[in-house]
Length: 495
Image 1 (cartoon, rainbow, N blue to C red):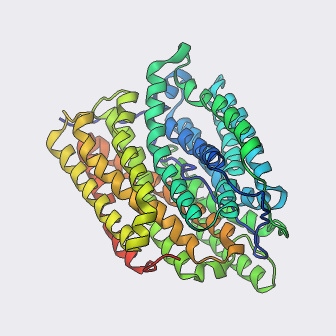
Image 2: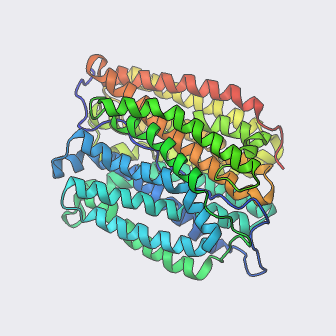
């Protein structure tokens, strides 16, 4: 029998700093790279650890929201801001953080970002009330925007050839692992209630990890920067922020607030903000200046085709992670730990697929992405059948096979897409290309959580948890099949 209870929090969350971010780089000479600027294996591990922290932290919150709401007496709209405040701040400042890394040094910004992330995590863990937690989460999102853009920029500047291909694949694999691991770790920490900290442990755990990563980064990560850093594109930065706010804020807060007038006004303003941003960036490039997002970048085949696949993939991935976390807890009455544990098979197979990615791409080219998308569709279909046939007695073990297939497909898609987007970029534009890629991905994640999550919760009161979950899964399956068709536009081989 389906459970018709509505969760105590809203579905619309903002994109996780989902994937560690890539910074915009100057459009002139390549980054400074001395003989000493070589990333060692330990340095790479440190960079990936720093990049994973913010994404893990976002997904940890998914399974902790009910407990936070109960402890701090927070309503749905306030809980929504705990998630949305982080994501909006991150999305707004991501590109700016990358440009600042080009100017003052990526290692320096990486260290500053780690320190800020640790401090803001401590503030989240000690928050005495809900709105203090919201404010701390906004600050934490800003710290993430300072930290994450330096990761891929450092990899791009300090590796080459096969070492770079492997490092980028590991970077992409970190995204999927972090998302699933975040929910597993969050469930474990909330259930363990370490020293009576309850949900606060999901934030406090970042403090020692950030401190250890800072010490490692200070010793193992080489400094790189642009020899001729460009000035910050002020008008472009403001208009990009306006574009993201007018889209993401109403989508993430509108439902929880009852779709007030301001949410519709912001959505109506979105196309005008986006058009103004495009015009300003085009004029800046024609005038010989360096815009925040050079329009010519989108005319590169690998960038254009790669981003066209990243958007629907991210929409489905972001929505799936949130809907499953809600459905397992409210419908199957899983505890926080069991809800996170159900995603562990996905996490493991995603990681294994990302490790195999470089060899598969070398042999099969873009067909790896097409095959991965089809495998992902098979995993979704299997999961839907499992839910339909086994409800309400579906166990964690019963979900494992379809979750494993789903993770295998996703792990064959995302890391390879990252390489495709970067593969045809001139060296001088590798950073800005990565920035565009990750900003696009984060926006897709936000749209996925908003649309699939809203669909799920809207159907929940009338259809029950099982059928609402099935509707969300089948919607994502249709999206994945459309994504599969788009993969045929990708470059046949990678450079």
